[in-house]
Image (cartoon, rainbow, N blue to C red; front, side, top):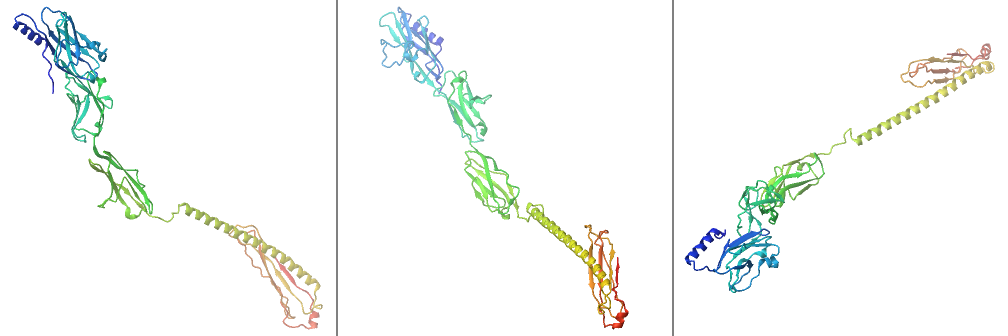
Length: 476
């Protein structure tokens, strides 16, 4: 409740003048009037108070000052302490009583709670026993500032922040506000109130108020905790594009809420009941049955919100592709083995051909040498039974070979021995047929030698008639 101040000095003066007139000018009486009769000031600020007084004629005021804590019964003859001499007010009070004829003022600075009590004017005259103290005096109240939140601080509601005092400030000041230590510009205020219409989570913070002109004497900060339902609910971290069969995946739910989220629940598309509870959801041994859209729900005591769904995709096991490292390794091993085997076969084949060539080259000279020896050493007389005819035909046949191999001469030889009768002629046939495997420079030679035994015994006459000659022909 607002306490109205006392009458103005002009009113007081008029009242005093009327009193004197009523008294017929015979003489004045003692009297003291205060303005205002009560003062409410903020702790740390200043308070100014004044008084007007009258006294009987024929007296001269020799001392006027302010005192405190005057208790009943009132005793005008008692000595009271001048505040300007009081240790509790040293350096904080300034009294001005003019010419000590009718008024006196007092200014107290740096007010504190202990300054809250009654203050009185004390008048002394030059005549012994003529003293006066004005009762009741001025009641000083010292208050601090306090921010009070009115209304439920839930997002969407209207909230008022009131800068409250324990008494109604006499100066009817305006107020300034700070949020988190920074002045609020263009704040919607009404008297000592800060209006938040409606309040949002961005309005949360620490608020303080002060009387304008005394911003250094602000109130204690009060936290405005704006409650709001879950917001920005989402599944943290993108799940893998495909989850392999038997694999695992962990989904995590995040949400901004005040008070914090109390319950997290996980849902799968087309499944009525929740699939899991808790901020994290882990799926192990993943199968195709678990493919689908998953979302989380965040709930606190203010509200609830669902996240956007994320899709989990199943990836079945597949055989190793032709480009997989395992397949490539197998292919390399197979090719290497094939190449190695091919090289081994080629080496063996070349070695075999070389051995055959050496054998053929050894046989032919031996055959020719044996035939020559037989021709010169044997006669029909010496061995009428063994007249041998040898015919060796050696022909070189050149044919083109398909494969480009090293130049080798491969010779094949077969020898047949036949006894010759008297009426048969020595037959020596050499059958030559040859082919080359592809290189025109290779000579493949085939030699056939036939020795035919005689079918019957020749007579000595016939044997003697015939010359013991071995016929040998060699065709090359």
